[in-house]
Image 1 (cartoon, rainbow, N blue to C red):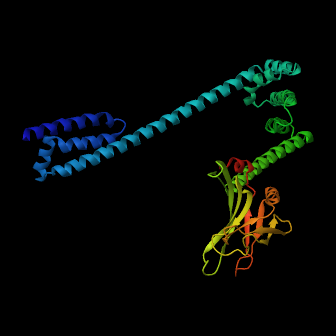
Image 2: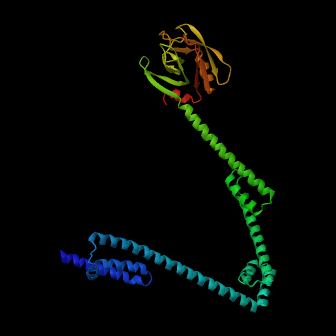
Image 3: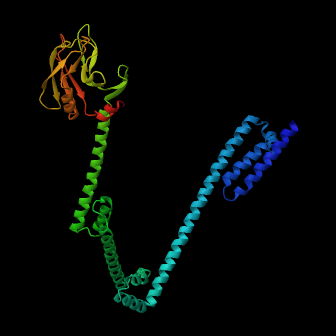
Length: 383
């Protein structure tokens, strides 16, 4: 086992030594870390240190030291590489600047030596309205600082920009001409480009404002439609539709019902919050009915004897409405008279309020948000 241990120390010690050698040139600190790790492993080095100090470093301490040296090796290696990269970048920048300066001086020298010929060529191109040629010929010689050349270059750029502006304006006007007025986004895009080219043009300014306003109107309209759809869905969810078989006629009985928005609380023995219920019924035996009911309490309306309640549709005036108690003498529901008239008014309303006399509770009001009523669902007898 001792020989295996020594062999491993030799192998890894030499390995770290070899790793460290290439780094001595450009990263001496990184190479030194590898040499130190090798020294902690190589038996001759350890024997020499022991002979001088009479102390041996424990295996665990050597392992920790080698690990720390590896971390330091990585840090110093990366640091050296970063420094080399920065130096290389700086060198490249200097070379680029030198080349640019050399080219600049070359152009200056050439212009000074051939000024008359260059000026003549540029003037000729300018007089022939060949502005692109003027720009390409004069650009590289502007470093000479020649005022005449600078003036011709500036004039050519101005004229060329004006031509480009006119051509772009013409193209945009041709394109926008074929766009329908109701395509607000496209029209705005074209007129915005035209206005950017001609910021003092009142027509383009007006067009931009007009189509921007139309787009905003469309957004508001779509938002309103979405809100209305959500509200319609919310109101529709308040209604419940059912259908059942009538065993006496083998036909279908259909129901549509809604619960009141508000809740009431009566005294003993009918205490506790409760809500009113409004139900439409289409029964093969009993016909069409509108029934109002509560969960607990006594509605003051006897069977086979008419009574009067008050009903208000939306913000209209309240109306006295006839009702009658059920034939089973129960006192938690009533049947409204003129059910067809009630349904007609209800379908045109969003809110229906019923004021019903309750024994020893006065005349509480029950509010129903009926705007989501669906006659087709009631007819079909299902949600």
